[in-house]
Structures are given as structure tokens and as C-alpha cells.
Amino acid sequence: MTSRISSAPWGELDGKSVRLWSLSRQTSLGRMELQVAEYGATLQKVIVPDRNGWPVDVSLGHDSLAEYVASDAYFGAVLGRCAGRLRHGRITVDGTEHLLPLNEGAHHLHGGPIGFDRQVWIGAAMDDAIVLRRRSPAGDMGYPGQLDVEVRYSLAPTGELRIQMLARTNAPTVCNL
Image (cartoon, rainbow, N blue to C red):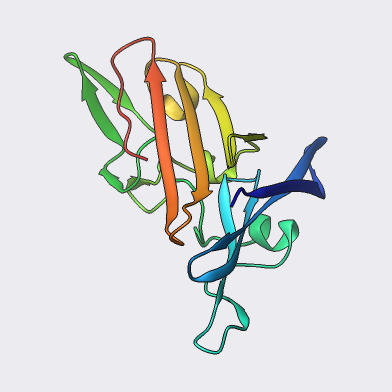
């Protein structure tokens, strides 16, 4: 019961090709499928069998890259560097205050105006999983330290959707994906 993984061009953004990755697997619940976009490392579709065994998409999202780019919703995307609202766009790390760009009134939300949800990630197939990576350099959206992030999407034989996130930094910083 191994996974089948493929990718296809999904569009282009700022001269970068964006791919849509698909993972399908026969599970104890039936045939399941994930679709993950390199834009925002977005879980774009989750297709599971309904009570009659028919495939149905249970995710909330858009059908095209253009719709994601035009939307202000965060449907299925990885948020970061810091998911949530940071009051007045201020964080203190090791005694140093950092001012972050404001994108929700007087506050910094979900990593700022160009957070991880608005970035093109690098996708790959690895060990029955779709793996997306990106590097956020020191100073990106005002955050200190370089941050390397990896997100792994997979389906267990039992039908569980697994999302694993790993982040490594070279300096003290804030990270809440």
C-alpha cells in the first residue's frame, strides 16, 4: 500500500513556475488523495470516500493559482513565520525589539503581507510523502535569523492525514507555523 505521487504545472507567479502535487493512496477507508500547491505550501484538496464510497473533496479552497493570489483568505496554507496576531507588529528576541510590517490595522498577522502563505515553495516527492521547503532569510518580514522550513504531507494506511512541520534557524527568532 504505497502512495502514488505526481506533479503538474499549475501556473506561474513572478516568473516562477508553480506546481500542484498529488498524492493518492489506497487506505483502510478506501482510495484517498491529497493535492498540495507549491504556492503557500497549500493543502488544496483532500479527497476521501463518502459513506457510499464515492470520492468527495472535504477541503475549503480555490480551484486555481490566480484565485489564491487574488484572495485574502488563508485556505489550507502554511502560515508564518508566526501564525496569529502580533500586537503593534512588535516582538522582542534576546532583548532586542524588532518591528514587523503591519497588515491588519495596527497589527502583524500570520507572518505579514508577504508571509509563507504568499511564497512559492520547492516541492518534491520523498518516501510516500509530498515535501515542501523554503528558506526565509534573516530580516524577511522583519524577523531575525534565517529559518529553513520543511512541511511533509502524507496519508497513513489507516487513512490519517499527516502534516509534519520542521523549522531550523541559525539565530534566536520567532517561529509558530
